[in-house]
Length: 459
Image (cartoon, rainbow, N blue to C red; front, side, top):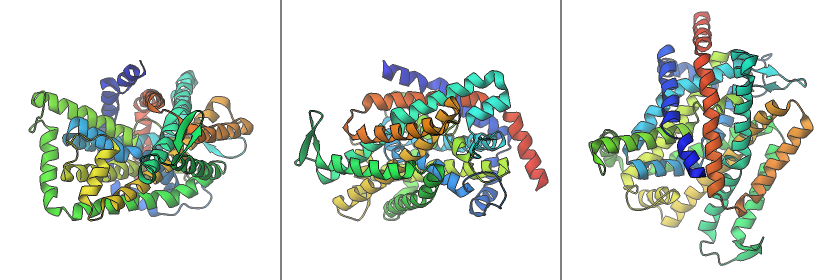
């Protein structure tokens, strides 16, 4: 039943809706993701001026958003899309990312414009506030609905159970794959590698989460660039040792995207599968349109909504057009997408075949990347779900502190859970977040265009 609901939520209507909003905004904003990209990069490296509202820097907010979006999906999700839809799925991921960049710009611009200051002086904002303040109080129920879905997605799986379980499984597969060193807990045997890594990661997460938004931001600013750079350099190692094969890989990706290399079900069937898997995975990876990134963007020290929109839109470029592309190319070049493997095993095999190192070293590098990717996702989704909870219950410090401890408890028990059903539930709530957000983006697109014109006229 859960799988049926999940397939319905992440089916054709949501994919078409997200893509349609992205195309609509791209047209109305006259291709802002291309024309203003140099300015966006300039804003990332510029220091915020004193006296501006907000709690973190633009770079800090971008890293905080990337901490949640760059995750196991960039390693495992890309592999899953290519196995199911062929190399052409990567092309459709690019399409989703291109139009998603305009969506990300719009939602993060609105987050700054309609954010508010809480009683104690901290900044709060996100889709729930631009729904309530932009569309009017009669739509507050839609904001509440988004917040409920956000809390559920963070606490019930995508931020906790699945991430910590993924980390401890990766550690276990590397250090004790045969489970030779075990302990019995809750009536079940677990490897010591699972128990020890679970405890260490729970403690590390707790130290960051209890510190609140500024600590999450400061940790993200260190870990996110490091983990992204480590992964990019590693995959570039594969590409540089297979330079002559890259042009053929691009040809295969494009031909497969348009059914010129149809494997099964004819050309049209192959195109539809590649399109569905690629667009769905691209959307899920960069979260453009889901409404999560605006929650981080709202805390930025800036009085210019357009400037932050430009900075935030680069997150989609980094996540999908760079990191997912590198993963996809390594899989296509090493031809591991069609040898009967699934999930992380596909990317692991690509690393083992592509890197000029022993297989154990390649596996270790990928394990380290997975650990960092999943750990930062835990931190990012704690912030998202906590802000959603704050909108639901109001500014109640004790309730929010209790929520943080509940989140940490979920991380603690994650390694010992069977996560298939939990992951599906989290998947459903994550998809459901998009519907209220997309309605608001369509309704407030005129505000986005107006703000953009005013800003560039002023410049």
